[in-house]
Length: 247
Image (tube, rainbow, N blue to C red; front, side, top):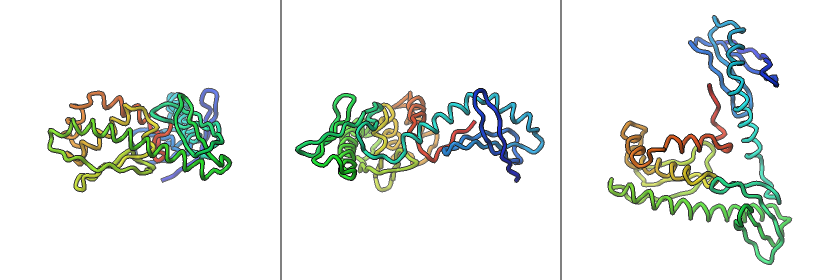
């Protein structure tokens, strides 16, 4: 396989892309999470045809690169400093760091208030925000899980153990034999509709561990708009860093 580095002008920008020749039928375009653009095409396809394809996909490429930049801005190392933006149930919250007589963190409208005896301590600021987020996860995920369980109880499903974890590439996971559902803590950043979708998805795995037609039949029966909810979740700027944009 031969790969070459090329450049092309698309609308108001110039991009670099890697062209790899493969025994494929179609021209394949991929915008990776690191912002690189990769194209694969059969050796018989002229470069002029490939670049015409890229110009036709200029809008897709621009949007994908914008999402890459938004993701990078969101996932950069946090300093938990005054003015930073955190997300809660789909809402952006601006962190306000204040000196206080006690250590506390709570939401107040569109602000996340952090009171600290030593506000200059970044480790303390991080612990307080994490504690707030962890408590919120347990409250919200627990409430959603209880509602979803009422839907699944008629199938003979036992109440699962609910666990929280930091996960890089998944919103949730299910261990049917152990009766355990694990949710990504970062899911709390998403709108409630997305959280409900993920929780129901994992509950249905207690019945059907695979993604068979039976799995989707149960999912659709209890959440007819699950595809729209999944699309909303996938479109969030803080979706999995391991995912790539393809066309």
